[in-house]
Image 1 (tube, helix red, strand yellow):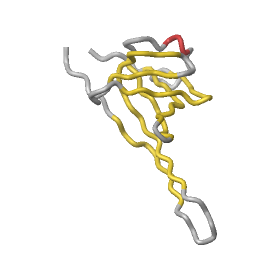
Image 2 (spheres, rainbow, N blue to C red):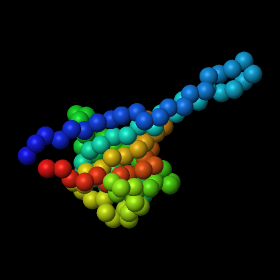
Image 3 (cartoon, rainbow, N blue to C red):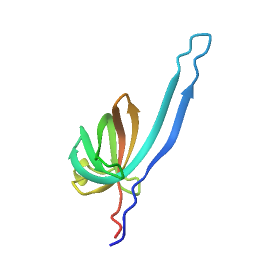
Length: 108
């Protein structure tokens, strides 16, 4: 069995600088992380085993979407412990809030 690589890649960023006219600075970065599900509560949260030394815990946005590797919407029940997934999230304070969970095919 070969090794499995896990990655965390920034996919988009939005920044607005504070202007003299009072415009507030906004900085949003959407990130993706890949790993193996170790805990999953549909509609609430999931924990992934990634390259990080500790498993990464994510909470879900109110509108989390579950899709397969082809982008087709799937039921949350398709995500199980030991599933390989990619999650798209935004860091909000100390929380990583997921809006999309992508079930990836197993590669052996």
